[in-house]
Length: 291
Image 1 (spheres, rainbow, N blue to C red):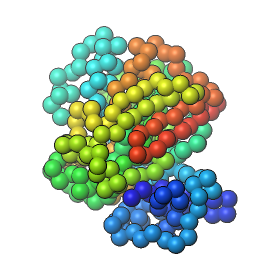
Image 2: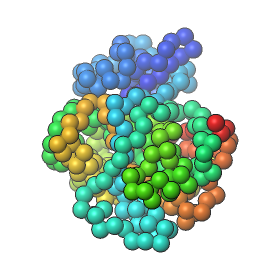
Image 3: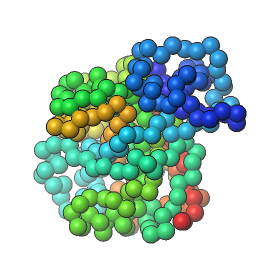
């Protein structure tokens, strides 16, 4: 099943089911209520819109937003560009950080360009939405806790991030100004024919374009740490809640930091960034002016 949050000129944002090119509004206040109900209990309504009659929003506002660092190619290249090796600890367990769940943007939204950076970057990622909470979740059980998958753009101010991480606490102002999600949430059942023999991982092509020019190409199946392993690590002695969102980290080649050896050129006002993941769609945003 495919879920979205949509609005029309005459209605406020509401959850919807997307099927065969049509969008069916659902009688729930938000996507969290849909998740609590469960995808298997959602029935197809009679009334629908064409996709070009509605606006797609970020599919949900996360309770919490974590981002992992799980693609080895990206980790290797990013470290090589900084003149260092991958820390051996990276291979011991999946690492992640918390980012801002209150700075969420959706498809077609303009992304603010923070006044404090000269190095704005995109990051091509896939994210899971937790459908069933839990604590100390085993990696083999983790897929049953996933409601679905969406595209995630972890916008980054690279110059600020670089300075912050010298302190040893990880990114903060380099990341907290914007994250994009959407355009839809696709459940595991809808991806079953693309599954690989790893927990919560699928064979899905991932690409990024800037102003119509392809910059990045990778595949979800190349992830080093599976979402099963990531969820097991995240939930170790910490309770996950339905509606939490966890990003994969950047796919190989999936950001300018990796592609340009940390030197830029970076994104500019007016640039159009399109992230596409097979079966999920295109998450398109335009870079706005500095504020």
